Amino acid sequence: MSTRIADTFAACAKAGRPALGIFTMAGDPDLETGLAILKALPAAGADMIEFGMPFSDPMADGPGVQAAGLRALRAGQTLNKTLAMVAEFRKGNDTTPVVLMGYYNPIYSHGVDAFLEDALAAGVDGLIVVDLPPEEDSELCLPALGAGLNFIRLATPTTDDQRLPMVLRNTSGFVYYVSMTGITGAAIKSHAAVGAAVKRIKGHTALPVAVGFGIKTADDAARVGRDADGVVVGTAVCNAVANSLADGRATAGTVGAVTALVRDLAAGARRARS
Image 1 (cartoon, rainbow, N blue to C red):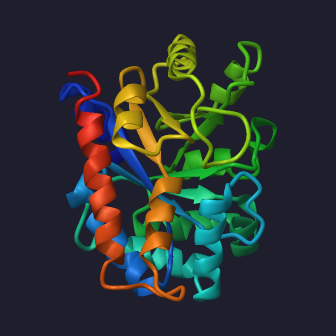
Image 2: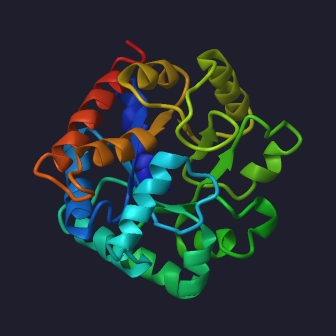
Image 3: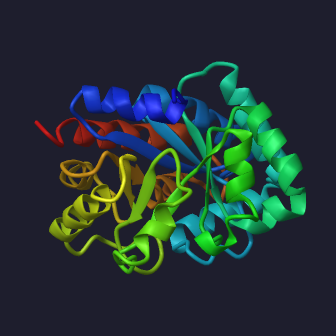
């Protein structure tokens, strides 16, 4: 089935490199700057965008991503504004996949059926909802699949071969392998272990496997990308935004700080298998 996500992974595989996924928090540090960042990512080298839905109690997020979400919420970001940003992005880009990433509470408050309808209308391709395990597939996963949205599931170092089939059962688009236990932002302790985990997961599914958590530099992207079909970077992007601010507000260098990082990461991904 041809989708933006499937087409992107196929094109990157044909080019002999992993896909580069970039996480950015919707509305960070404000709606206007956040939209400018979103629009600038593909030209900087992002193959896929994971668009964070700000939430006040993000249990899996490290300090950098948490801070990004709080900045966005303080600036007035809502789920409706996040969907509107995707719709605005689609006016100029109909090829780059956009995956909404976050927690179930804002979706539940919006109403599942209304959310799925609105997400599709905006041009969203898939969902990563980190606090809905496979046992809760009827809540959102199955309705999303029925509506035509990919539902991307997380696998972790503690997802053993007994648990993995359940995790993969209704997963679509790609599998997101979390490179470590704990929260976002920590460093990868063993790239070899990550590579072995990717190979193990690929033994259970034909879906692409993308690795996130702990990828901060071009070298990280190159090393992880030797084995993974995709590499995802989030905390480093949120930190690039934070480090560009003055008194908590965007500066003339905020968008450029993010795009410079993404260009560097894209160069690392391109040399992953060279």
